[in-house]
Length: 244
Ligand code: PEP
Image 1 (cartoon, rainbow, N blue to C red):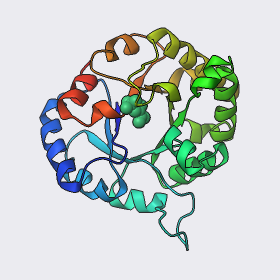
Image 2 (image 1 turned 60 degrees about the vertical axis):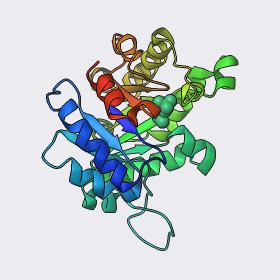
Image 3 (image 1 turned 45 degrees about the vertical axis):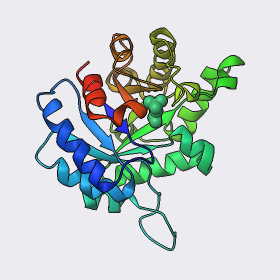
Image 4 (image 1 turned 180 degrees about the vertical axis):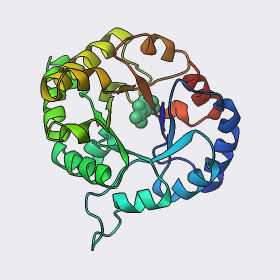
């Protein structure tokens, strides 16, 4: 269960949130709990989660280790600060910052080399769903973003299916719509990486997940967890999603 905080919260707000969240998820053993704040708030989040089961992730990473790339942050830098996870290819990064399947692939490889666990996002836009090309879009994003990984690299990633029309819109995909996309993605995994990888691979759903719809989504066998935006900004709301 991962919370994507996007561009919200200061360092003080990050610490205060985690102080409240800690006891609410202290007994959780059915899920890994991950919070992804902005880069500048990673140290505050890592400090506030020391000796707890809550792990911290970044929302982006650059694919080179170091160099003259003003404004970028590398995977070894994230690992050195104590970050364990990184979201890659979020639709907002694809839409506003020119991220492509090619950059997703390079970032995923770089994250894995630094020992980070990538959460790689895929998902169709509304017009793609309406024109019946959802599976083609998912297949293309899968092939370009993660299909080229070696099997041992693929085993260390998590996929997040996030239909763009459901992100931040309050329009969740129904459990059946989400499950159909997850089934399709799992079949892509099986075709490319084999049956065992298909069974082992974790696919999160993201798109207006809330405390009142998480149960229905998690009841679907191919939905293994959630990537939560807006509803992860409040500790009680995120905790009730984690403790669905
Ligand atoms: C997200 O940011 O990945 C997301 C799914 O956002 P929201 O839950 O707000 O739709």
